[in-house]
Length: 560
Image (cartoon, rainbow, N blue to C red; front, side, top):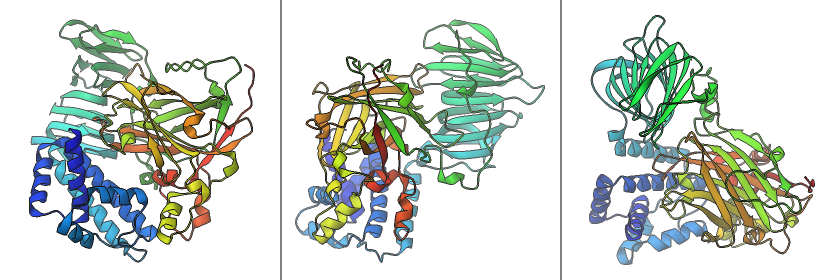
């Protein structure tokens, strides 16, 4: 989409949400959504964003015509003119602290229905008589969030799994465990094609003959349990847990594998033996917990209060190459999504510093790595990113007191916000890989009002690098960011400082456009108990609430 088209679509989306589309502009939007998938994705994102704003507005007590500055700016920039503008303002729903909760719930229900309508054609596509049945699901959803239910009959066709785990039993008593994101074509009770994703096949005792095709090989079961994977980059793998299989390719000699062996094949290459890894595939469902829905496939529970920031030894330098050879791994922290997805979606993060720079590094588990298309202004994080938030000002103390809520309320009442709500030294650092240019990118914003937003060009004083993992299911990121970018160049943090900090990781869909989930960690335990009389804050909004941030402890140099 061109910039002109994106701008026009933003206008239509805003007018749709405000309820002020004319017959002609409604028809224009409908035609656009019918022919352009990217437009549909952007439209759905706007619906999700405004549903969240509806919830926020109810809690913050925004009245008609009052909203935070950033949103007011968007509304002003996209508002229609003349008589239609007045009509538009008149039809924006008023939200206040007395707005009934069912209204917000109804909006969420409408969004789910709309999402289902737009993505019906993508999940799933089955025809004919049943050849398999869904035995279990765990946060398994396709595009639009539609979930297959236990007991669903499956016939021949394409299964498009965006996330989660799905257990299927075919009419030939073959158990299949499919881990999203994945696409699998069911041909019959003994034959499937895995286009992308992870699949574990388990035959009934004494049975054999199930065939899995991938874009690069054909795997025939000889009485066994095995895993098969296929990546969008064209790499296929097979790993045997029990028994044996035969792997073949049209232009490569076939091989038999036994338990404990693995091989892979790239496009046009040979069948190459590799290292067996026990946890490469999810082989069985974990026991269900009563509260498991609070977690989910792409979300975590924060359990870390701090990150230690190592001092770069005098005379040492950090080479931004994505290899992390110079890093002090004793300060690394690890956070992961809820089991059984912890081995797939996780992050190991590290921070270092010297007088000139803040250094950030992470190893991220991500089955859709480095796909960020960066197509939507203001939503650069959504296509996959690492975000670090840091208050680079020791005078603010801790815990931080500022918040986006404070900014909104102060604007509404005409009062001054808290100092750290609008501080230039409370920085938001978004790190992502631009799949279009192949370059690392950096975005900065300041305060809880996100003012002063800037995306400095590569080579403008900072440096960053993303490197994809060999197996295509994760990446390493490494950045050096001058303290002056955090408005702390004249007084950078030093040993002994304890500053407010928060880490986030976003995972994207295969197109690198929409955010499918996030990790939030380095948080302050018990902060919610201080506001029991107010609404609960979901983890995805911790970044907007300073008292939720954890701490970054700046360590003295070790001389290593």
